[in-house]
Structure formats: structure tokens, C-alpha cells
Image 1: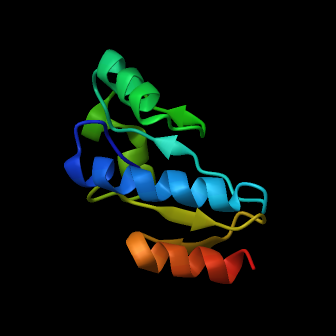
Image 2: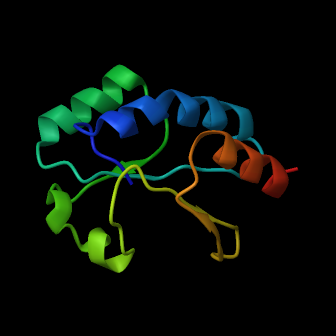
Length: 106
């Protein structure tokens, strides 16, 4: 979960791109869920940052259904889900995310 206007989200994107490139052939996928309100800014950021994974947004910002559905209180926020749909970890960032992915995708 992220937004183009979110500085911590933008800071995390290079790490996510690197992880995506590293693990994409090991049954790993990222789905970006954005809390943007402005479609043009959202699309422009995705293109400029060259984010290769699927992206979605209802463009309702913090009024998005996803905020309540997934109890999101801040962004960036990650939810790691295994192939069976089980949540493996939540809100991991940086080295903690790398470590968990290495563990799960070995």
C-alpha cells in the first residue's frame, strides 16, 4: 500500500524494484495498491519510477475501501501473502522485508 505523494513510499520503491527483479522468477509478485487521489500524478509516478508490477487504485485516497478492509493506518504498508493466500507477514520494510523474502522463497 502506497501513494505517489508519500515520501517514505517513494524512498522504499528502489528496494521493492530490486526485490521484484531478484525474486520474480520464484513465484513472487507485487501488487501495488495506491491511496492516491490524482490519477495523472499516480500514473506519472509509476511510469517515471518504472514500476513493473500490477497497480491499482480507486483514487479515493484515505477514503478507499482498502483502508478499512486491511486496517491500514499508515503507508508504506506491506502484506506478504503465500501462494495459498495465508498472510505470512505485515508491514515489513528494508532489511526485514529482504530477510523474510529470502526465508520464504529459498
